[in-house]
Structures are given as structure tokens and as C-alpha cells.
Image (cartoon, rainbow, N blue to C red; front, side, top):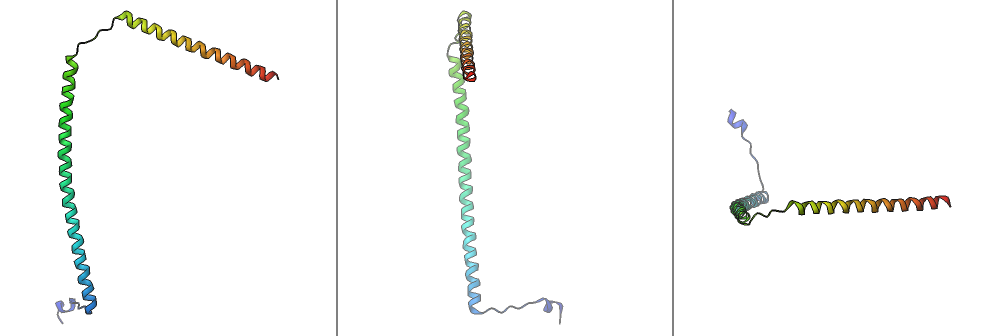
Length: 119
């Protein structure tokens, strides 16, 4: 017996086993073909997506430049310092009023607590 004869292995299949194996092989081929079709479809969609993203990016840059052009076309508005100072004073007085209002409410609550505590 030679070396090649010793390494050969024979498998006997019945007709129904052979038929089932062929069916499984064909169904595997169908699955692979469907997978290939899906991958090709994915690649096409991915390329389309990249084109759309590129177009959106280009349009966004154009929009940014147009916005800058519009901003520079409007006149620059100067606010007088006196108006700014008046607004700052109003804000400060409003804050003081709010703080004093909170303090008076705190005093009222403390007085109520004292009255309740005495009972």
C-alpha cells in the first residue's frame, strides 16, 4: 500500500443524503448571492450618501459666505454710552429692590417661626 492510497478516504452516501446535501449546497449559494446583492446595494447607497453629504457641505459653506456678506452690508450701530449707563443703573436698582424684597420676606418668615415657637 502506497502513501497516497492510505490517505484516501471513501464516504458512502445514500440517495436521500446526497439529495439533501445538494439542497443545502444550493440554498447556501442562494444565501451568498443574496448577501452579495445586499453588499452591492449598500455600497451604492453609501456612495450616494457621500455625494449628498458633500453637496450639503458645499451649500453650507456658500451659505456661510453669504451670511457674512449680508452682515457686512448692514450699517454698524453705535450705542451711546449714556444709554448703556442708564440701563446699568436700572439693572442695579432692580437687583437691590429684589434683594431687599427677599430680605423682608425672610424677616417675616422668621417672625412667624418665633410666634409658632412661643406657642
